[in-house]
Length: 129
Image (cartoon, rainbow, N blue to C red; front, side):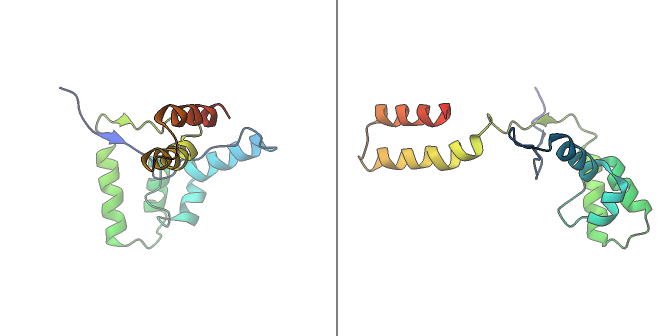
């Protein structure tokens, strides 16, 4: 009974917890993702711009956009009118643990190099690191 529509960003920005310039990094991400000025520089070179403000600024700027770019931006705007679920990117660090560490441990188990129990222990150690 619920919509299966999901919003999943093509790019996810983050600031490392040990970053020495957190405020500057946050201001850059804010500028990059919301500024009409950034929209005019970036255009659609990294995909459809992430905010309505940027897409509108680009369309109003007089920049030469292909018909395909205009249509794709219109599709994104239409899609955003729907009730969308936000995609879950997984727990922090999953980008390393999921596709890399878990795959390596799974292969060790599959080739009989370690037991399932040892693999689980190795995975928990990786999570705790």
